[in-house]
Length: 422
Image (tube, rainbow, N blue to C red; front, side):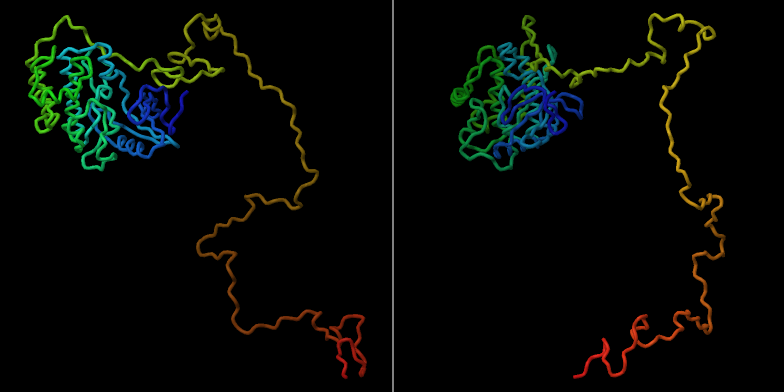
């Protein structure tokens, strides 16, 4: 069994690495399902602050892979998200190379839809690249894109965690204004989307700086195997000046929908693109329904099947015979035990027998009667003198309280308690 984190998440196996931590496949004991979790060691306060910012994002969209929950335990923190097993755009290009234009349009449309939801929350992603765009394992069916890894994302209006002359992101996917030190904005994400689209169509990483120089001289011609309608959309994403670029992802998506209608029909000879599972089998001790527990050595017998009768199979004649012909069941005898010797007292513990509950007077009293615990009324009038005891009637003899053996001293001789005169 794996390590159980915060009493809920059981780490299964590592499946990748993000910008600020390792990504694990995790079994959620509360939700009873497998999820992905990014785990971070609390060593660097700067990295931890970015981690906290990332887990605070809550964007509910089918094409966005945002954090769902988080937990902390000792020196580790983690947040969970949906488990996506189809790999990334980088895996897809590594398996098939350049992709057909219509298939690329499907991927680009879903990516722009997810990015529009992110921008609607005021968040700039700042790290759009093929490795951060994941795919569900849908086989040969329609692909399903998930935009993830918000490790360096920034909400507009929040303070930056880097210096003014320091650029965050992946080299090769920077917008020209990012290299000049401008504040991150939505058009910078759209420039990175244009570079990713060229990567899917050509099969290799484009040179962003060379493209900027080409676009400064005007819109260049479409590369080989890139249809002209689709190239016009890509050119609108790769404009060096952000004022000439698409301002929103929704606007770029509308232009893409118009371009798809002008594309030629798909070739029947094109190879079918299959998005298969890249996670691999579960390790020992885990199954599709979660952790597998070892069976006990002394397992109980299986319960009877059906309506409580014995399991089907060959039965003895005693079981199949009618009730009148069956032998009587053996009598159950209790195991013999040694006699218990009781020790009784030789004489009663009390000389007076205890009254039975029936003989004891009832403490209930009828209304109007006086309790036996109530005080009696005091008599009014002169009191009679109480007789004095006989011992107090005898006069006290002179001396020391009339004690025997002591006599009063003679006159003229000082006694033991008579002070002498000088």
